[in-house]
Amino acid sequence: MPAKGQNSLGKNLPASRGSLGVIWRMGAVVLTLGSGLLFSACGGDSKPNVSAEDLTVYLDKGQAYLNRGNAVMALPALQEAQAIDPDNLEVLVALGLAYDGVGRSQQALAVLEKAHEIEPHSGQISNNLGVAHMRLGQLEEAEKAFGEALQDLTYATPEDAQFNLALLYKRRGETEKMMTALTRTIDYNPGHLGGRLELADHYRDVGKPSLEKQQLQMGLAEHPDHLVLMERLAKAYVAAGEQEGARAVYGRIARLAPQSESGKRAIHWLSAVGTEE
Image 1: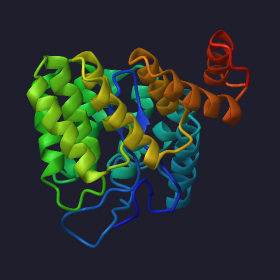
Image 2: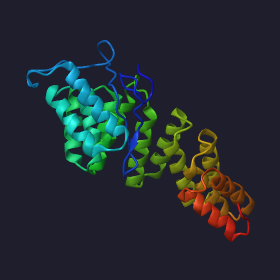
Image 3: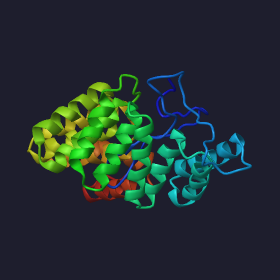
């Protein structure tokens, strides 16, 4: 099995988070049957006079643009790759992400449904299919897909599907189920940033500042220089009236990244309370 977030070529392919907060993950597909990674040969509908090397070139180009957050430029390359090999799972997964990135949610769903038909037992594909359903407000279908993802014992990042389930339950207003899914997310991966932030949000909203701070501090233990976590923790200290705690965290932000927006806000707060950094 490839390492988390890697495809068969060994390139880092991080998770992608869209406007809903749901997590996509692309990369090679681990099959439950057969001999590891699938790289499909050209099928009967493929373009004539093209080679496996052409497919690799277009796929690499599309994935490189996706890694840089440029779905607009990725899309034509991945469409060329799909024209060469319409049933290539790696192409279909990446193409789903590209369609989603340009706001073509229905097309993203269509290519991921095709991928799921080809390999119905892939946790990665089922998770991404759930995301596509969620984009379109199809929550029942999304919940089913995320559940299928968690049934794949070879799925490298089950925390993604658990986190997406948590967001789905949050959207439905099912708080108890949301909390269970978030807890499982953290059980799978204590450093899951989205899980920590969602738990902190929940505890803030229900008036439990000590638990909010605990989640943010635990997140910072895994991501010590993460500006969003630090700024959230500083605000939690301010809300709790703990000026010294806020001063320490804002001071660290100001020293680490004085030119960032978080740094500028930290410097402004420190100046307002009479502590220049």
